[in-house]
Length: 70
Length: 346
Image (cartoon, rainbow over all chains, first blue to last red; front, side, top):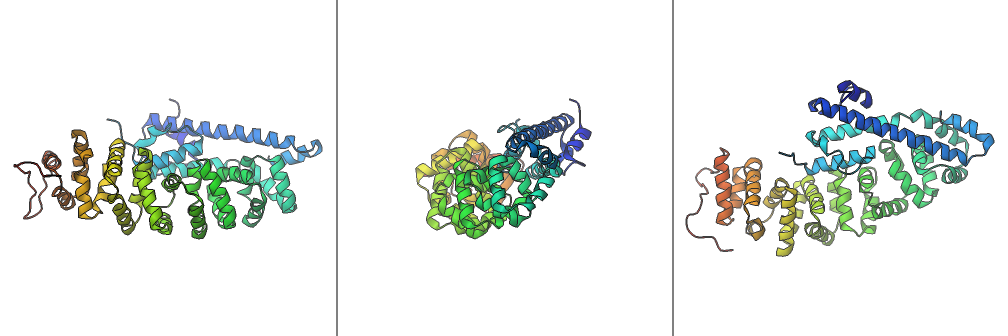
């Protein structure tokens, strides 16, 4: 699998937490992918939630309120 | 050989699966990590997931200060999902977020509670009126949101927890909530709140329920201080034969002799005698597992105290295993040797 320790560090925002040094390369890559998938799902959910929220806002105000989310 | 997932690992894996939105048991492959490492991983992932979009919500949290709370509540319920509300609430001043939460409709507040950043929830939850906490807790329990509830045990006052315990009659739910506690010290305080009759009911319910529920009870008994563990062990030791047999069958299904035997050791001798003489223990696989646990985990003296009360079959198996393992059991001056004549009567 692509990735390995650097990909996992990137997904965890820095050095690995204690205890993860023992994970083999395949597990580290798998964990990196699992975290990446969760983050991307969250981003998608967030985008959908914001779009849905803006539908309830009068059109004139949507632009300024969308900018609050940027 | 497959690595048996311990109760502590199971709790941490379930919490991690919930955080990532992964199906139950989908992260069992992480069981090569111990429970503490899984917890550390979850805490780091929590920070990444909640902090990655912080700036997007800060603007809205700041803008919300301009509006009066009643209007804000209407806007929140009309326009925002609980997911968005939770993200913004986590960045607001606690006092303001509490004022909003007090006015939100209960179903919306329940959904928001599930989504809120656990790191910012402490102050919010601590400031909520007890009646509101009970309302939300009852709704969460009805939905089986035990991971969420376990997370807040530290944040909620003991007064509020006491009120919640009185409001939630479902003993299985209480055990599941305790299973997902973040801080085991807190469990001591909570168990102390339960009247004796409720504790007895809890132990009976767990011993006669599913293996999973019994596992949660074992985890609780293994987490509390010794005095409380002894109290719970005494209650378990007084169960009738049918309940005890069910308890032992559940322990066998879980492979958790390492959790049960220390509890048996806390029981009175008469209770220990009943357990070691239960027919449920009388099969080769069970005796091997018990022998392995007894020899490697418990030490010679407590094992021998139990063995002295056990039928020949159990004693022989444990002693033989100990010899094979290179750890023959014999206290100074009082070795417990296999009996050569007849069986002990039960």
